Image (cartoon, rainbow, N blue to C red; front, side):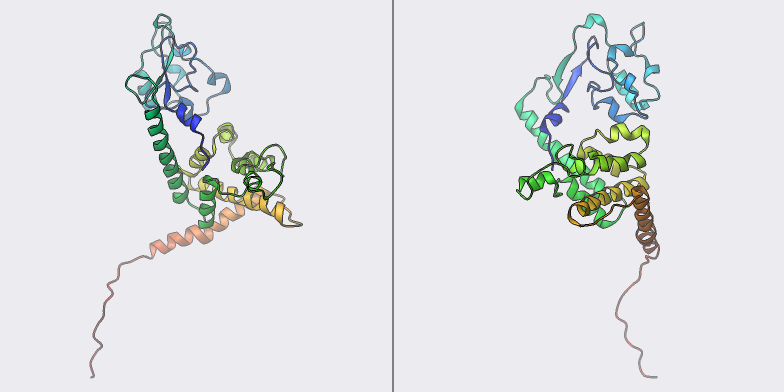
Length: 294
């Protein structure tokens, strides 16, 4: 599994708000018990709003200006914010603190314990998202391999000396990691930009691998989870056929090809499983003495 311990350590840091002048309301971690607010909004935060400082969300009389937050945040999140005293100029400068120590001071021991727990927790969440999502079994198996960085991308092949270059052969714009091959390569991006809502595309293309998989596979929209998984799997198959199958031609309309596979699965796989469940019944099985002679 690809790990980024630096970004995980940042999850344990938070801002203690005083004047609120150099801490971003949406992007920085400052609400106790929550991550950055931008990760849990009801709608997309516009770029012009995203960089605003906390001090800009206070009224002239020194109270929180909830009118600037409504429509973006749930009532629960607004209650979390209400627990914090609004910033004021006379409160001094903002400062960092370590959230896992009562004193706010950083200690290597608590950082190590935190990293160990986060690693297992993230793996467990991704694992559950993959195996509970609707879709063909072979797609779920493939997603599990992708989540654990077990796909034989050019980066892995170069590391094992199976190829001389780790570059992506589809776009030659960077090393072919799992995320690059299946999302960031120009060929993959062209497909995703057609099937992902435009309002969701910014976050879709900047998330790290683990969070990207979890966000797209979990939730109440089973159709999107199946479409995402099948598209992910087909992009990898097309990539392999490009490299290793002479004369291979990708479908002219890739989105239509993905839709056909999704609809085929819904007819033969998903509906078959549901109808099988409807036919279940309890039966008592046991030996009975055969009838005697008349």
